[in-house]
Structure formats: structure tokens, C-alpha cells
Length: 201
Image (cartoon, rainbow, N blue to C red; front, side, top):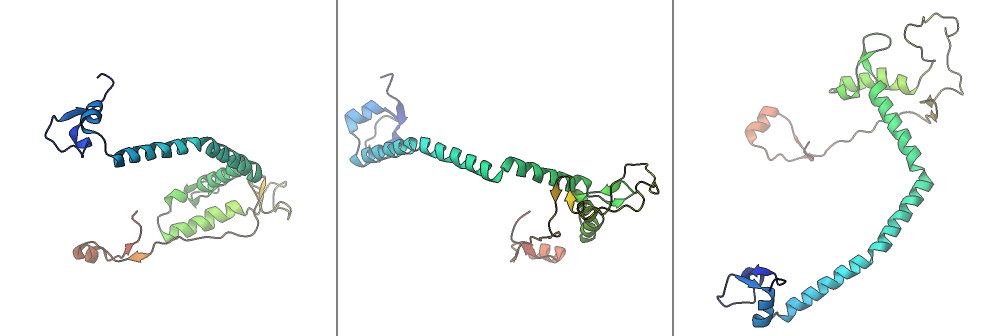
């Protein structure tokens, strides 16, 4: 039969005789039969699939409504844009190891030691977030009368990226992995002289 698939005998464990290695589904049904347990399992599987398929419209409607409510309530598009702007500004413009008044040789990606982190925070991050004076273009004389000894007014202080205001200070949070028992060879432990951490990096 062209429309009857042919399968290997191992797919029909209830057939115990030594017959051909390949059997068609029609041949199995006509000559050997199918146990009730197998039929019940197949019917139950089909009913479960039918119920799962019937619940798809309600699930999609729920996800759509949830997304609309979140976007309307939290203004996720604007929040995401501000977050990306802050991240880009901190990563790109918080520089340390300065070579002159405008250019820094290192950024956040170059931090590899504790001293590097605190240099980045002191020289790059804090002046970027808490500006105390107007920024100057390159080549402008610092003793120019229109900008000399000019500080930001109270209303202008704490403004970040022109449209955002920083409330409070900066809070650093450190994430550390727990120390666990090492499963490395004893020779390596003595060589490195370090403990093992919970997560593998």
C-alpha cells in the first residue's frame, strides 16, 4: 500500500514472532493487532495536543494585552532609550589615565585591577556624572572672560545628558561568587595558591 508507512519491527514491541524486519502499519493492524494500552496512549496524546492547540488564541491574546499594558504604563521605549544613552556615555566617555585636559587613554573595558577601578571611578566616572562647571570645546582659552570662574547654578547641577537629573549619590554594588571545595589535582592547587569559586568563568 503506497499510503501505509513501513517501519522497523522494533517500533512494535508486542510482536514477538520472527518475521520480516520491516512491517507496514496496515500489516501490523491486520495480522498482529494493537494493544489497548497503546491505543489509549495515542488517543490521550492526541486529545492533549488538541487542548494545547485550542489554548493558543487565548495565550496570544494574553501576551499581547500584557505587552500593551506594560508599554503604556512604564513607557518602556523611553526608559530603554535613556538606559542605553547612560550606558553608552559611561562606557565611552568615562576615561582615566588622561594624557591631556581632554583625552583619556583608558576606559571601563581597560579596568583589570583594583587600582584601575578606583582611578576610573575617581577620574572618569564622578566628574562625568557630577559636572561642576560648563564644558569647554577644545582649544578654548580657560581664562576667557565669559567662562572664567563660572560654576553651575543650583538649578543646573545634577543634570545629566541634558534632560535627566541625578537624585542622590552613586551606589557601587559588588557581586562575589561563593568559595567552594576544589576538585582540581593537588599539584595545581599548590601551584596556583588560590581557592575555587562557585561559578565557572
